[in-house]
Length: 121
Image 1 (spheres, rainbow, N blue to C red):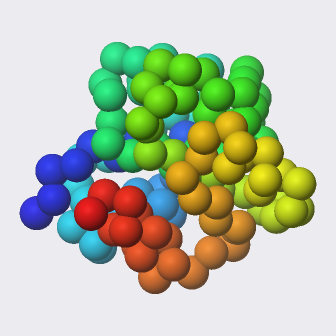
Image 2 (image 1 turned 120 degrees about the horizontal axis):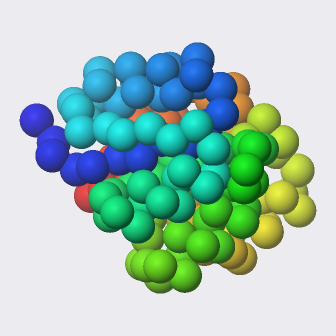
């Protein structure tokens, strides 16, 4: 059982549930959730998760701005951006802003597990 703490931030409850269940099948049981970017930044600051999965389009604070604030708190933060918007410019903005990886939705469960496992070692 892996004890790494993972934060999922997505405004769609079904997507948080899908990601959580995918992580559970891979043995990641320590998962917390945020329903918007502002909540994600607050949870990151208080809980210091090992990995963050951030949706790009969210209310309160979008994923790119949340990413910038998370990296400002912890420059070594491991953040995977997840979005249905797979434009090259968006991906480059996320990587330049500090994202470790970018996954385009819909993604295969194996792809998500591979990226998470690679980042967490």
